Image (cartoon, rainbow, N blue to C red):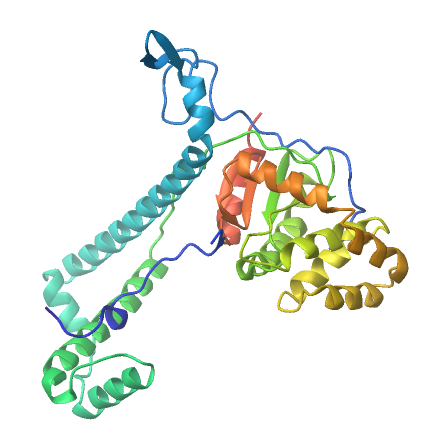
Length: 366
């Protein structure tokens, strides 16, 4: 087995989310129902259960246990599991298609030269062999970063081979990108859509009430990945304008002790018409969300200090935060941020392009 740690030779795809462990319209207090369908059809019991809700899944001493009762117990995890599976499936298809395109372009280039792919690659790529000095520098850098490695003399040959292989992969990747840039490639892979659930879009909102697409966001002011998602959310609002509506709902995680009070603070600011201003201030200062800090932000935003402090200290807005959390739990939120695009779940700090895929699909629906 290669003794060079896996951290040196592999990269990992992580779900960018926090787990449980330009105009700014005024705050909307009325219900803003997302245009979303139910988690199941009339004929199906629920996700992965293609039987009628009334169909028995067990019989206990002659008494039937209906599927609907089972799904009531498993629905949260079933919805989340299906969403995660579809995202993995989407990634699998996209990666496979990318590799297939690169392979076909490389084969075509080799055929043009009447060479095998191996001959073509070796004759096209210019790779300088790794010197002992390079290998030593790589080794010392790894040690400085905390890697636990055997003595250099014991792994020098493995290390040189590893660096050479990486050089070849890097150069081949660049060459493939050049081939693709010169070719005419049109992608028509169908969008893998997340599952759709019925989610209550009650809360502060931006965008036209008549928008065809409603995005309900469950978020946490102390969550790093929630903050990273904010620029993407702003870009969506700018690009789509009145075609989309954003509804913000609170989902402070148990390990973020300042998040619940921060969520209340935004709603307290909303009483004076400055929910979104406080919302932005809280995300901009996510590392300093103590009550004293939040009250300073209120002063900076020009809020009535006495009124704001009274609202925050009394816990007046706590029921709103709790109601949002309960709704999130009901629809399967198990980390933040979690977005529901017309009820279609997108978990984590997803890129703009993924939102665009789902939004464009929904906008194209009758």
